[in-house]
Length: 358
Image 1 (cartoon, rainbow, N blue to C red):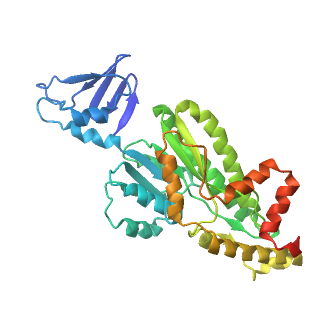
Image 2: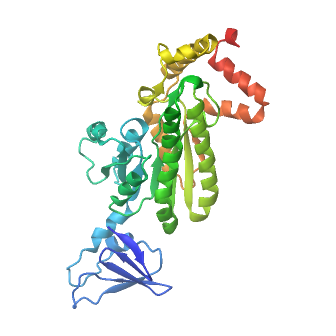
């Protein structure tokens, strides 16, 4: 189904809507001289609703019921090869009412088997898988052009990567890659779809955020910098896009049981690069890794918990700007904004490192 505007006419595949300023005249596209039917309708009237409740063509040569597919909410999700993106794509595509048409994107299509196994071929009319690299603008535009409906209602920017280790050992290329994926990748994905969302005066943009974008984490300096930047970008957009009826929401995640840790670029304790780091930093890094293992073992959430929060944001008539997936995040964030800076820094240090290391 194609919806586009040209001059003072709007066309929906074969249907031509002539704009007279007050009403649209929906003319039957059957091409039969015997059919004189048309239907006057106000701007922004639901064509799909009319199509499924009326029989426009008097000759029976055109089935307007086909327009019903326009009722589906079109969703594009980045980073769907695993984790949150995969789980959210499966959940939305599995909606019993078939409310959503999901375009699940991933950089490497060789990793699509996991997603295909999850849906078991049951959602061919509600799920498509597209190749899309958020660091490659042309790849984003190519994916956009492959969307059959030529519109999206919900954009989920979920692709992200991590970088952990002492700052002294991080290469410029490694740090640049984190910023290209987490920050610039998210921004240029939004860039590609924003004009169409503005034109339809409707849309939702959901971004997978992190508590690491709200408070600093040792040995995650560049990762946190990328997530802090996303917070600022999304907040700035939210203020503007409110005037276009486009809602921006950040889903703030803490530790989650996904492949994120597996894919995380992490400096291992036996790595020779650590030899250039002082012994105290090495000891603190080892202690931090122990802390991380404990947190992920005892407090990490399952992806289904995160998906429920995404669904809340998607289904809410008035979505919030920021959603927290866990109750453990907000108190620390609250401490940051209500207490002197040194109190927050000291508290975080005590949480992560043992007292004797203070």
